[in-house]
Length: 408
Ligand SMILES: NC(=O)c1ccc[n+]([C@@H]2O[C@H](COP(=O)([O-])OP(=O)(O)OC[C@H]3O[C@@H](n4cnc5c(N)ncnc54)[C@H](OP(=O)(O)O)[C@@H]3O)[C@@H](O)[C@H]2O)c1
Image (cartoon, rainbow, N blue to C red; front, side, top):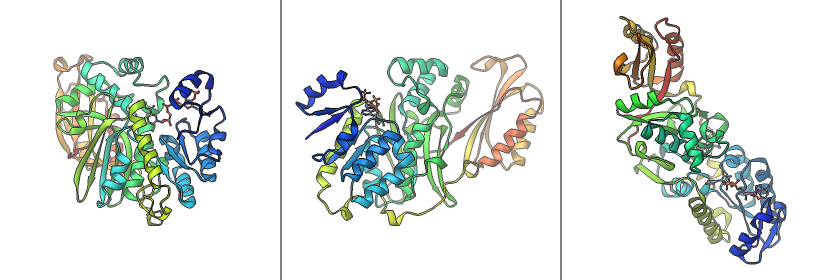
């Protein structure tokens, strides 16, 4: 039974709320809801971080279970909020916070509990996936694709958190905690957005048999855990590469199950409501159960958490796409290969786009040298790029995009 609703501006919403719920209590002060003596479950869908943090803590202090869709809140303060819920024997459910309507939390936390998960890689931000799909399908630049996304309602008026990878980083930090039994480590994640991706690279990447996606990746390595969000080349035949427009998809690999994929709408009123209501049903079914038997919020019992370190990006090993715009002269390729070899980076393939054959024309006497490398350490790649950039034959800023040979 919906007992009370709080909204900042009730005048605009009164009619619709009364129509939906009949005569219920309406207030512009959310504290009246979280402290309400007749309310068992509080649903937080207001967004932001500090206000909902205080409201969720206040709700739990009053013995209420909480459902939220707020990934920013949980990525930043989840360790405190989940610990508080645990101490109070309360449920804090958040299925809508990651990939909207896809029940990915239930899948990772419960459906795959027999597995040691070793990789999660996902397209978890519909705005950036829409923009990159448009750039590829319509051969348009980033600014034009962003404008279209805003006109069609796939990007907010201020889309900075989507474009710079923050939103995807919130989500993968939560998934990483659930997959590997570590605290939520949003502040240690590496993030890089999509605003520097250019149509020319999209075209070259396509020629090479890859597509570029903003991927959120967390991986269990012998040395620690990788936690990163950045544009990434993936083979064009893999399922994730074919997730188009605003859709979301998450690949989860476990030791027993192998690869599993989850696909669906990652945002929007109905898909988000689907997950919020599933949480409400879960809490309603389980709230009388002994808290000892609740499903742990983040899949692992708090006492079973471990402190495996999150690897700094410099220690991550991946392969790379490099594009060097160079003067068209003998010896440039040999010098480039020698510098890469000096840094223990081996070349997988090289493509030189001749002046008259490049998809996008450039200055006379310059050609694009595109290199795919094998696995290399990020710190070595950084050093190699610094050295390559100093060569007189390299005319522009070198483009570097990471690459993953995902097996889905
Ligand atoms: N939209 C999606 O597709 C989606 C998907 C997954 C998760 N989420 C998460 O869901 C949350 C909400 O997102 P949204 O897109 O629905 O945002 P939104 O359209 O801005 O809606 C926020 C609502 O919260 C109300 N509100 C804000 N501050 C309030 C306060 N202090 N007291 C009472 N009411 C307050 C607003 O009321 P007024 O309009 O009266 O100001 C508005 O109705 C965010 O955490 C977001 O990350 C959204």
